[in-house]
Image (tube, rainbow, N blue to C red; front, side, top):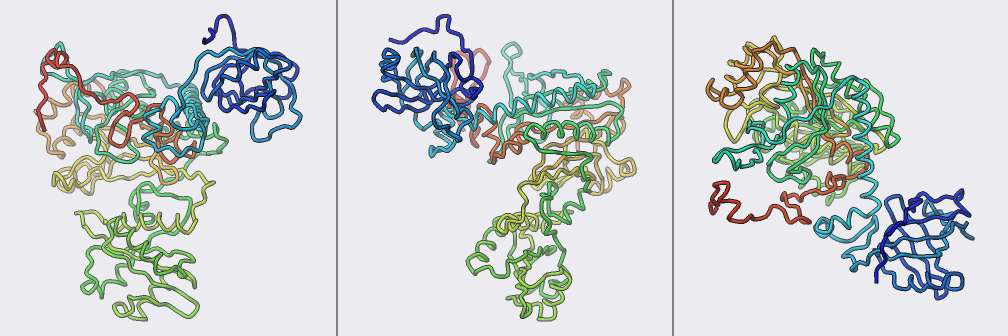
Length: 590
């Protein structure tokens, strides 16, 4: 027979007990974490969200409580009345290790089946099993910590932006479909048959309208939805900090976000101090092979195409060749070099060319193609020292107006940085990346498309290139990067309707198409739109980095799998035919 809670009121969380609580009476509530039966004494570790407390049931002192404790099993829900005493021997492994509670009464509030995995930080269960039983997974201390950290980060964001004069304003979840780079998640309308709402990929148009409305400073912790191709660290629905300002200089937006990041990093004891460094987009690509460079280590890229040019036909590569100097890697074995080659090919390399620099000189399979003098000159130019390994690569595929060798070189740089333990994991290196291209080439559509979204501002001196040389147009966009991760993206927006019309034309949209997709927004632009700009930061990714996790699923309460499935709620699911008929929808077989 299970007990009822009745008028029992918890007086402390389990994990809050300390030596100062000795000789006081408490009522604790939680889950049985572990049970140890020593005959006359039964010990249980009682767990709640604050931590563990050791409870002692003594047969001589409290025989009734001891008898009930014999029924306890893992994950039973109980309430314990007792007295806090100091332990004879403290346990430094837990925060409450100086004390224990001698139970005078126990109330068994619910029982439990045997869980499919133990409720501990280190579990051997697969992620699929954990996600299917997410309600159990979330009981683990590590997940508790992550969810609490997420709360504190969001709380600090709200406080910081309130102090800076921002209003938190909600924007619609059910809106119209507008092209923003990914497929929309559509919601059929029951009232308006054949018409659909779309879940927002971002509040982009609405936050710009808020600036037109004179709200001046807006922010929102908002849910966004993107039906993208499956990727390991993407979610169908995600959370972002959305922010917009009127009459801003780029520096004003940077300063606001730097203040936010200073406050959020302080939650985990990390000191982040603005202003953050700035890197031009092209410079970041040239030096690090990435527009989200990991700045915790050096090992920059070098364009060594000129050294390889004489052997271009023999080596059979196209485009440019990038190289890095890997310190101490000259001693790598054939197996390690083969693994490096396989990684490089998976990253899009045509092949990998290595040069070992030793005290005796320079050696490489390239000698027959580049010559001994060519190799020596290459090593000297790159500043390679004895013990270093020069790793060079060209890209397998070429994209118009894009140096694909930089991306390949950037991936090799990160791989070597990890393998050689060059990355200082204690560093928090922020950077603003600016000077992005306004357009990017779409291989699928064989045309230039907006690199960010069609409302991104353009440098005034580049406006005349919109129709003639779109690849030379620079955007007023910017990204915030931390340790090789893009935290967020933003821009100064287009606020003039004439420039917006030219932008749509450059993207191949007719006036009718632009009006159909963005009509209400284009109309709003004609009523005195102020200069404005903003940014959106990925909350999931920020918390993931602060928590030291490798997947955003570990900091989201109810995430979906890489196949966009909620295993716990068994979503998505089929619906009744009656519901489909009411919406006027027929399922077409694939």
